[in-house]
Length: 219
Image (cartoon, rainbow, N blue to C red; front, side, top):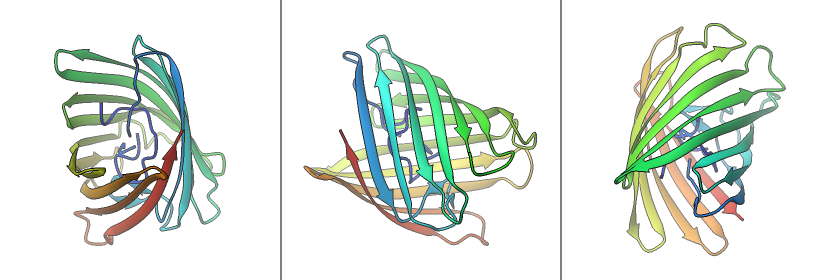
């Protein structure tokens, strides 16, 4: 599934849980996968999660042939805000040509007060296209609880080793204004890792569009 809760490197939405946070790994057998990368910004729901600072991100995923998986993902945040550390587990399965993924992710911010929260994340995928929802079920700050984020998107190879991805989403926080976000990105796969260029924006005129370059490596 192209967009599930397992987070490899989600600097470009869907970062959050993508995933808007997110790319899976084979469940043909139990296996462990690591990833690390650097990005000129951390995009989450069309906004900068790192105050427009460059970030280092990485993670580890473990998946079983039954469809069960768990993992951890982290990112620096910049401006003295410390790090984001995500812990998650879930289950993925298929019904015919349709893929399903449901799980839980806990977001931990050791350098920030009252910032931790937990999401239920569900994704449905069909071929290169997916739809997902993140719903906050608990938080240190009660204003975060019941916030929901919806997205649809997809990815396709347009040339050998060159993929084009796009996402459109809607943010519905429990407190404050809602907004629409979107992103468009290119990823070039090489023997030395993946190079990416992402454009992201929202319908909030007070927010500037983001252009992010990145490099990731999996092993």
